[in-house]
Length: 58
Image 1: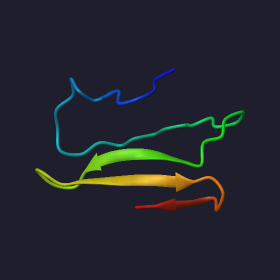
Image 2: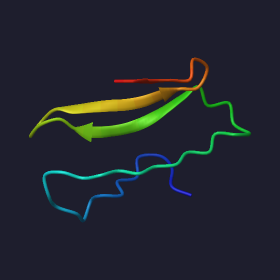
Image 3: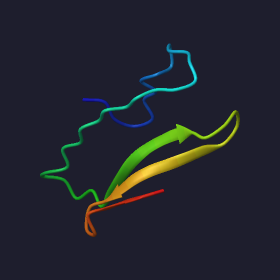
């Protein structure tokens, strides 16, 4: 299991990636989770999921 601030792509270079992720939050009290993605050379965005509303957010 990967947790915390792990950077799974630290050794990969390129401009575009397809990310397929599966999260299991059953048995936890997690209210939201997500991924930080690069929007440009210096900008980042968080793509997240709100468990209670069952909706994605940016």
